[in-house]
Length: 272
Length: 271
Image (tube, rainbow over all chains, first blue to last red; front, side):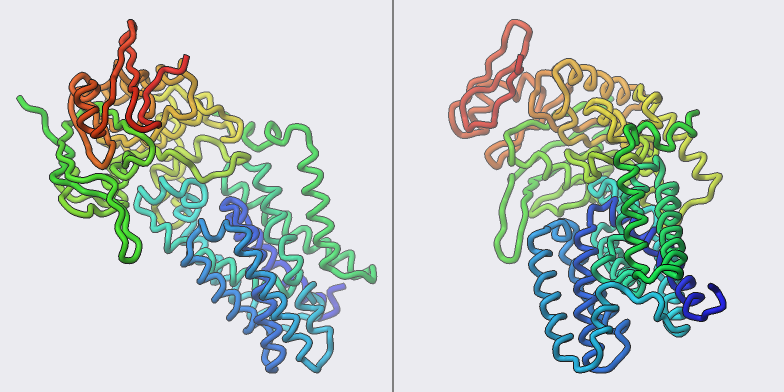
């Protein structure tokens, strides 16, 4: 499998994206901002479609649009980020605009398809490099902001009273979601972003009693699902993104159906 | 010897402005609070009780007048203040253990991850605080499994963890039944006395507080009345404050009911 460059690139980019999405996703889930994250990916779709239309690398369009959208959401604040109806309205418009851009594009329809559902097997080594650099920047920023971000995600009012700038943390985090979304789109596409950025984190949230454990579980599930998805798709003629989404979904269902997830959580191992 | 004042307000007016419009919540408040006092902040909904706490936390600037805390203007992140807000933003299904939430009160505002040895010490400190509020057995329980009363103990431990001089508690009794209200007030009172902490507590129902209160700040009708519970919570004083007839009744247990004025100005014992 690894004698093929496209598979090596897929594993490299997929692993970076899974790690970043797993970590960012954990905070997205804690902050209940998953719809905002989903909306950003749709905004990114329009940006990428626009970039394709004018003949530049779609990742630049993705980054420009998601970052602008993230900045705007960050400025409007967390209460705005949780306004589903307004976000849904903007999301629908942006998707419509993206469809217009795609229809104006006279090239192959595969571009649109890969934006919507991901095209991990078509990643070039230059894309891997962009993904790696973006991923490292996002992870360094998250490492620096870890505790205040966690504090504002769990208890915003107390964090603010303790001197944490809720406003700036909100803006920076939305920019980090935007950047993470942009690189994740290559793997799972805009429509399936939940599979790497929300579902693994949602599973982790139900299992972990400590944030660090939650992040570790989220990353582990995202990486394993990506690897397993790539492995299966090498032998079967179906899209990788389907396998990734199916794997995380099955784990999620299994965890939800477990009768006592609460008692199963890792707390038991940490009794004094 | 006269006790040292740690909070003073002079001609204090507070409110919120958006664009050119300004909404005054209360005006011309004058009071001082000494170290070790247990102060109940009372008044109807929307009168400005939380606004007063926001001023002390440095989250809101006064419109006019001044408010000082430890002889300086309030500022965000003052480690001498422990704060329990009325609402918490985390999800009701959150599986994070209580100890982690308490610990955030100590280091949640610092950048980075923190060194492992320091993190261990913080967890020990958080555990100690949970012991102080009688909640050590809740340390490793997920927040989602805790009752309203248990959660309030966790939040109290979080507010206490930096060894503050002042506790600001915004409606900590709201989610408790009558028996738990009295127990929780007793816990706050004993903890505050043992550590010489000044307490400002917003409540809707004054009765569970009566045994603990040293003074009352009553916010209503854009005005603020401050004094001993007996001086403020009487028909004459509250009628003057509301600007309309108000009657304060006491039952044979000494419990108080405020009747009249607008709806929402009541402090009934709901039994």
